[in-house]
Image 1 (cartoon, rainbow over the protein chains, first blue to last red):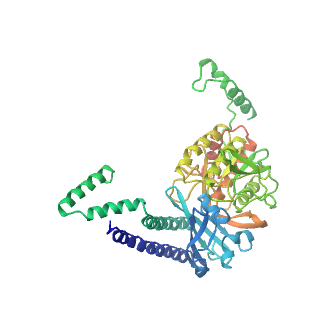
Image 2 (cartoon, helix red, strand yellow):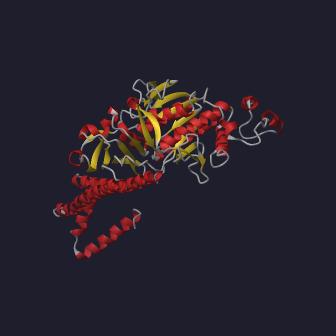
Image 3 (cartoon, one colour):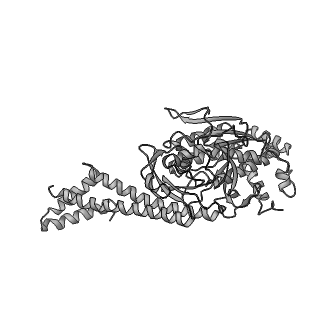
Length: 215
Length: 283
């Protein structure tokens, strides 16, 4: 068992590295979304199920420096509606609506006059919301843009799913007695075997994997 | 068509076995065929206002103080009790997001004399919203509304079978369930069920223009792009999305039903098909 921390550290290093990659991917998605729509800002909000809040996970444009990590209740406002109904929505000219402002503006001082929002859906779950703020005012919205928004949201949902999995793995690795702990202990035990026993040990694990259905 | 309604009612009361039609019972379900030679828009909804038709907006609540919405027949907020019982209490908060107000405004604009009710299933918190949605739909079906506007869907598979059961229950109780289709590549419900009227968006500006889709599961397209709607705070906004195409179809259903209240959801869907802008209604 003495070599277990090293093994866990090695796996953890891989997981920690991936979190940074996925965050960079989310940042790239909002950057491209903002650019393609010619918008002033774009963001990805993630649902924190424990606190029932939406958290800014990636922001580009207005509010970029202050918004990251900011939270607000997941049940209210336009993002809350998009999340709960799993339906994309486009709203123009929202600048003077005080209740709309609760959604974004209170935290930033930035009040958008238009908002496109789509849910981040993965399997059966709604993971968060992709928003694009303030498209150019002169252009009327089209169904083509709605489809494009859906495509970006789909891409963002895959990235968010990977990010969440990386975080879960990291948490499990840190938890004594967790699922990964068992796997890590097994790997340590095989590592510690003499060459003669090692072959039999690996064969045993292969049989186990086959029995578990992952041959 | 009132004779048809009377006969349909007689037939339903004559207690036929559910699984068969005995020879001597054929006369009992005779229905006069008073359909016009050609079902036109004019026949279907010409001059109709939605009067007498009860439309339920299952959504985020409705702000009845907005001048573009006006008086509601009723407004309740749904919650689920400790023993999973459905609790419907009078909604004093109105609309928490603006969306339900927008949907109600669209119905009011297209079918001005329809009776609009709000059943709020959103707000307060996100967790548990799925269970509240199901409870709200069950409540709305039990209330016997003529049309239920559902500009929302769920991706949770465990809810699908209950939603399916509720959609079928509505269908057989002559409640028309009009549901937003999803424009993203995900499985969601209840719009995929054939017992509902599913709606996507078209880009035209005529609120009465609607199209039949020969390639389901989305069956109809309603006006859903750059629509002016009432919003909370007394404002008017321009909005886009399938969730705004849906109340256009709900209102069109209300118009048709106000003129032909005897239509079952199955017959109503046939009338929608025959009078769709790309079928027979464009002329």
